[in-house]
Image (tube, rainbow, N blue to C red):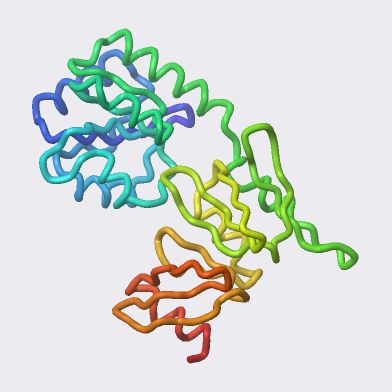
Length: 251
């Protein structure tokens, strides 16, 4: 597959819409390679995790699971989102979750071409920035505290790692909660932070939560259980993470 190609997965409960979009992409947007197409949002989640596409063309109004709900179930994802829907009133919701674009069905060829062109330009300028800055910014100087640079709206903010209480996933963003009660939203996926911060005594207890193990106040037993943090936040522990988490805590 050429390096400039764009891997796409199409999700739409209407078979005709799915076929029409696939045909338009193949005919008018040659750089787009459709690696998967499905009418089933649950199947789409599996496809996305396995195939790691660059973009999702996602219908919003689907009977079993809406496009918004599917993204919540998916959790972390690297793909851009282009919503395709017959309903204009979803545009504001789409913008709230930072969708790359919003196309109204039936999708106009010119609008589709423009969306793909902008996507290709963005991909061309995208390097390994996904967590390169995070890795390079950790300071190991014995005379100063370990810090990490996180991307914010107007640049990068350097924060002391030991001051991070927990990090929570929010679509394609993450919210960092600090010990002093403050928080910031950053354009990084939770899995990026997980990879960088695990050596610093952090653990991902849930698909949406990465916590600093130094600030656990109490563990509450249950199917997965819950963690009470020093600041009073109660965090769910997923069932699949429970055994590993308890093993780390030696309880």
